[in-house]
Image (cartoon, rainbow, N blue to C red; front, side, top):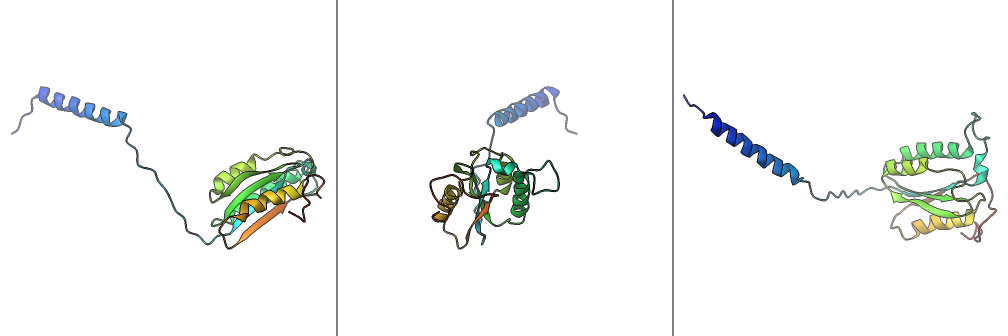
Amino acid sequence: MVSFDPAVVLRILRLLALVFLIIALARPQSGKLETEVDTEGVDIIFAIDTSGSMKGLDLSESEDRTRLDVVKEVARQFIAKRSNDRIGLVVFGEEAFTQSPLTLDHGMLLGFLDELWIGMAGEKTALGPALGVAVKRLKDVDSKSKIVILLTDGRSNSGDVPPIEA
């Protein structure tokens, strides 16, 4: 029968605890993780109007949902069905800017969509600049299919570029 000296066992356990503590303090991590996705999707840019006219309550049966709320809901439903498509977001009012570039990270895109508010890009509607920014986002993208979806309730009443020119 083998007998163990308790002092030796205690030293071994202390040594192992010290080794594991050093390893834990070193915070081992895996290397940089990259994922390459090869899909046959479509590149889509939503151009969403956040001008003052989107405060209207006439697109919903509920009296507390604005036009922008309805647009956001429809966009969410559309995004949920487009898992292989890269989707981006342009926001416009008097000004137009890219809220999200083309991405397959639809969770992030939905987060940006949730953060839209009426008036964030001005009170008027500049369709030309909005279309210009959206088209510019798609211009140099190497893709077979490129789409701009313009979600607005009004006519252009601002901006220095006419919509037809954009």
